[in-house]
Image (cartoon, rainbow, N blue to C red; front, side, top):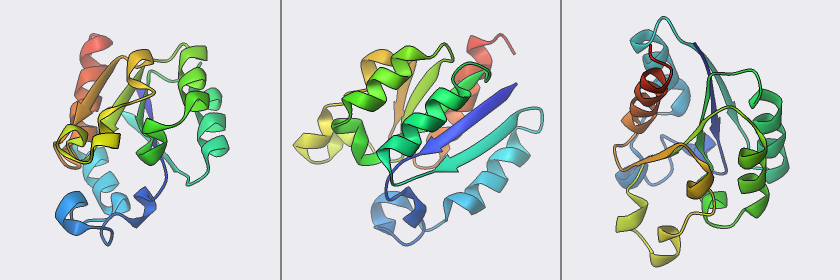
Length: 142
């Protein structure tokens, strides 16, 4: 199984950005933990603060991976272009959020991408990514 994790804007600051909301571990550190937890899954990682680069990565991996785990960050609530790129590819996408976006500011309650994703996982900290991998495994009967 081959999975692409895509993180959007400001997620490169995990470990230092609002540790009360996002935790104190960097994503690079957590990625090692994910790979150890899922040794039979090939996991690629990409992060960008640039909307177009996220779209390019979705298009690049959206036809030859078994799944995409996408934390679009702030673009979740604003990007029709990312929504359209998800809709255009065949690879299933799971929307992931570290925090429970529904327990935060009102503007975070709306997602432009949820309706075109296989599912949404939010509020379980960095473990939201592990839950998404398990969901993709179940969807692929692994």
